[in-house]
Length: 394
Image (cartoon, rainbow, N blue to C red; front, side, top):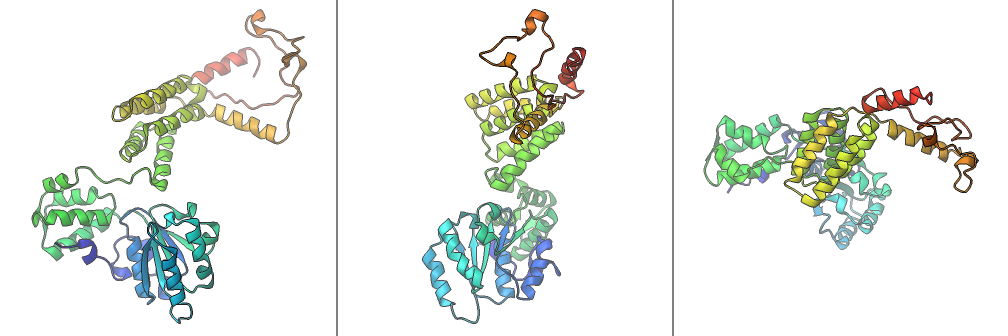
């Protein structure tokens, strides 16, 4: 049984597939390594994009002893033994910690002294941006490098190498599915090829689909992906692009995001980005939130899709969002006005009841003129604006 992930693991920068912004000749990371001056570094990016491989290449390029750990099982005593071993050594070791975002605070504190005196080189890796999980003291002593999904052309290059190595035969359609369904994850692609090759050296697309029925996608619970996907959904709805919005909704659902979370964001969006241009949007999304909480997946996907499409097709206004923010800024800046006596709870003398005057009567509501609300010429807001203008209020 050929282990393609080990057989094809790169030994030097030129053998690494993808991540050219880090590993190409002249790239900053590679140059620092080749000059033996690379400092403590943390790599983050999707699974199977080469983080561990790069750490091993760095150790080989800089000729450093390599120690590999996973933060989920790392013991402080393990680190202290290595620190003591190399305390007065001429050569410092490279300590690589995978899943570095899982390091406890006390584990991070153990790293600080050796990072400060540079007696070891610390390299960390994570599928999440470690900026949010590492202490400021760790961050100030290190550099952050982001890895990207590996391109399909780079994955195809890997497939070709694996097929030549193990004398595997793939037709064009099968190869395309192998690459496209791997979601930029080289390890996942090679593992699928490995399992399929154990069945037959001539592999067809039906075999691959029996082993991987659906394309891989990053789960939305991964912090970076979570925020990127929900951001993309909101911005697509705000931009009235229904196809894009439905696509990102599907990504969120397939990635394991809860229906309640998605629905809550849609309720906020209905007020923030649509508002009174279509007041019904808030009613519909609130109904969506109630419905999905009672029903759940898989049927909740239909309710969410209806809400998303409705929001995309609604006129957009952020007048309510802007108005409350302006008012809050004014209050926080110390603009505290006396309430007119006629509006006070225990002193209604002088108050004019609008319904006694056909629905509107001019009177003082603020002791000083303030302007926060700017209605837009769109949707129902246009009608509101017309009515207020007819009363000479605005």
